[in-house]
Length: 328
Image (tube, rainbow, N blue to C red; front, side):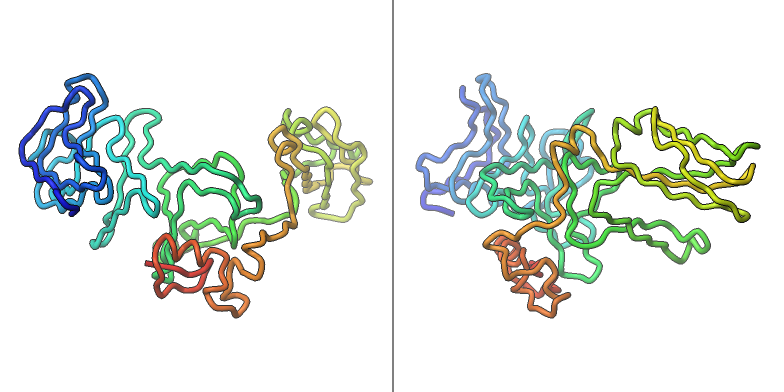
């Protein structure tokens, strides 16, 4: 603690500015126990305001005001208000550490419609490139082979572009052995923003079939590509009329032929036009000579694009080398 640190054990109402305890000097630290801020003056209730070490608390057992903690014990800091805990620092605003399996160092819970458990926001200039801009939330895990930098249980919404520096897949219980195995498939990649539509159709007695597409097809897509495959026999098949009014026509030289069809189109909606897809991109000056996955190129983890940032955020450990490989 800093010089002149104060210890308070009483429950106090705040002053008109809503501050229960405030350091008298800017370099003073506070050690606080059992403080409750009511904000009686109508201002913003601030239980503790301090510079350097604001609060260093170890939780043993909580006997404070009633709320949703239930029987949980060992609460180091309990902060209730419009903003429960606000941390701002030149290195880290808030650090949470847990030494127990399956428990969290920092936990955020959002109640009600639109409640946000954990919010990350970053602002500042953008130097371009994939990795040159500010980051709202950063997660890293390289301490175990199957560690996860982030885990989402439920629907995940990405408001903007989703970039993955690696692979992507879906995972399900294996349909032939769901109790003992998983089934994983890789996602399809392409250098364009493609939408794919497919189906089967049977031509009529005159060898003609009209394929109906969704009513938004032409509004969403452009540059149409067709694939046709005859099923169950030999026949010639062509696209006799291309897409117009969200439908196209297939013709076969024999009647009543089953045809498997596929049509793809390139996105042309307003968002896609405003954010054209960039296939090849130059690395920024600070990223040149470095690798997204240095181990794949036989390079040391220090050659990773994210090595310096991960080391600064989490400390240097014995990571596996991926994306810089820093770990705590």
